[in-house]
Image 1 (cartoon, rainbow, N blue to C red):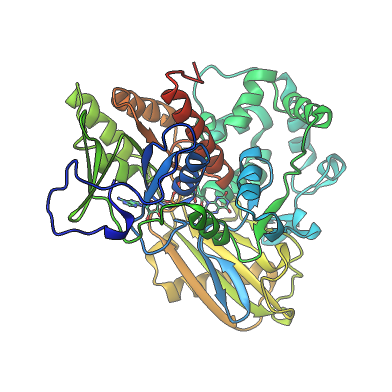
Image 2 (cartoon, rainbow, N blue to C red):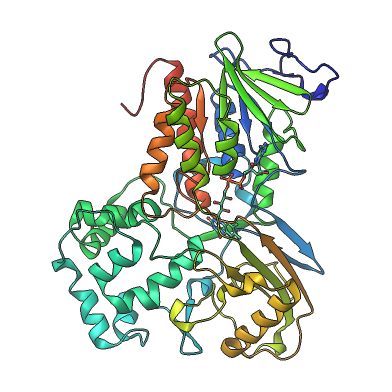
Length: 493
Ligand SMILES: Cc1cc2nc3c(=O)[nH]c(=O)nc-3n(C[C@H](O)[C@H](O)[C@H](O)COP(=O)(O)OP(=O)(O)OC[C@H]3O[C@@H](n4cnc5c(N)ncnc54)[C@H](O)[C@@H]3O)c2cc1C
């Protein structure tokens, strides 16, 4: 690998000549070198877990800062996120990462009031039930809708891959889908539940049906198992850090022994038995026996172009499959108001707007109600989401027109007087990969096409889940897989 301090060189060809990474580790496995492309949460966590296992890791990142989608902004005494807003404390891998990064004291848990979540219904915000009793008394669904949910344990399993809409309507009925699941899918994927695959997008829900024959029976079994489990309990609470989610990214990057190489857009990757993987950016070349691609699917399609293959047709097909993964555009609009400008107390996590409401806004988060220290005491900060896989006319508008539309639609639900103190739009041209029906087959075909290349690993939110916890968990699994592969042992066998 190339010396981190002499990244750019006049030599057009450094094959086999790149120097060692400074401060190489050797903690029992020879400090083997690994290149990770992409410094989003998938790449940085992969690098961190690999370093924990004694590997000597270099991360190459196209942009000027680490973190990928995780971008925290401070403005006029407020703090907001351009991308993800929080993570859920439900994954041991995340807990290990936070402890290892020394960030336990920096955690900001969500306030108790943030347990309340709203759904827009007929132009008003309705609080979602937080316990079974509220589930019975809620006015989100009518009595026939609730009775249909109660019938769920008697519904049989499906044998074919279904969309989330098909699965939920079949098991729980149309009302449950329309008023709860459709907006929930907007909140997580900014996606269209009629297109997303239940197996790929919400595998835990699908597994409940497969393992227990019923979502209700499966959920009850999980609650019982959690109560009986020994060991540290993860409470599933929403969390962030004092300086926002980006703090996790900078802390991890600071702990890497080799500084992340920023402004380094990798243009191509090749492979030879002698040199391993050769990674090029401009005139610079790095080489290592192991390579992790932690970049969006279209970038993967480009970067695998020059890799050797016994079957050109299969590789070309895998590239087409990668390019076909849809990443819809999303705009997040954050804004601050004086509290007295908003009629609604905004006393919850946020609100989601079902398709039936026929609005352009997908949802609104209330960051200053979720976490302390996000706004001045007399102010509210809100972040509104527009766009996504449902398709949205609002994405054709200018930023100023979009803001006006967002304010007008939001006003109907929360009552807004006047203009925001400030507002800032973050436009994501390719936001979140959509796991549409057939997605698992695509991923399997990509894996098959690259299976002959030892030392090549793919990690990113297009394959192992889009939630931050999924990315961290899959990064930890990657490090264990690399160790196992080195030991000539397949832990998943
Ligand atoms: C608006 C929005 C809101 C979200 N909200 C939430 C939320 O509240 N909770 C939650 O859990 N998840 C949320 N998500 C999803 C979550 O943020 C992502 O799934 C996750 O951050 C993806 O991380 P990643 O590392 O896989 O990819 P990315 O963050 O996309 O990182 C990929 C990195 O690779 C770099 N790169 C690309 N090509 C190259 C190249 N050729 N050479 C070098 N570097 C390259 C990019 O610059 C980037 O830094 C949200 C996503 C968005 C967009």
